[in-house]
Length: 298
Image 1 (cartoon, helix red, strand yellow):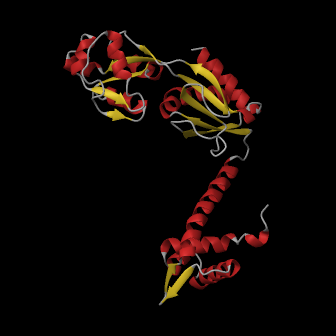
Image 2 (cartoon, helix red, strand yellow; image 1 turned 120 degrees about the horizontal axis):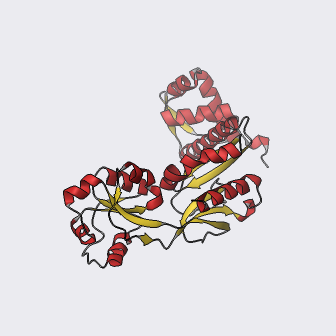
Image 3 (cartoon, helix red, strand yellow; image 1 turned 90 degrees about the vertical axis):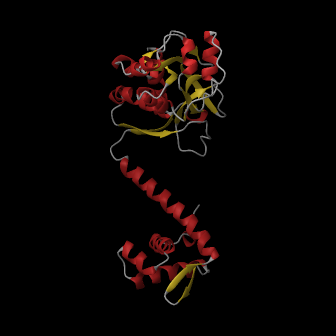
């Protein structure tokens, strides 16, 4: 697949990339712990093998040519990927398998990670790598084995396993409730409404559920993640609509309290998603079985 004659030596590429980045052979030599003449020779060998000039040279200065600028950008990406791949390979020493999992940030930090030791206890030696993703992606271009998704069970080329529904409740800190004298749903029309940017209609739906008219349910500061909304509510910045299961610790400790019993059941749900091609892979199946049992048991 790769003909050796078309693959420059790694030392030549490192010398070229460092010189291109610094715009200086001497600085590149210092970074690579080589002499300036050694770096210059490596760049010369690279240019000879490619048959192009990568730098223009004038009075001890080196400036990238147009071809050199293009090549440097590509090589920088390639070297970064090679470095990451090498680190990952080294990290797998002694492991019994690796699962690369894309998760919703708040679901990952507040629900999954506190429970994942149980999975490791059942599967010693397995490594799970976590990455944050907020929207569906293409499994063919992203190096994930599975993902935790909220919404509808629509994901091209993938299987969606329903994990749990979501009940959203209004919460705030006890101090904020006392300061704003919030005693009925109508009192929230004068409160600061903490908004989750991906759920812009949530407050409008909740006020409608309570039969309360609110002129502008979109008002208030916006946050990209539920974790940020929760922290803002704990800090007393306003009232928030959040999934009940994601704030169990704050409710138990008294840092937050549920304002009213009126709640919303979200149209979407949480799903475990994995490519059809990986459906029979042992580690994917093991994680699937574990998380389905865990979510359905709570």
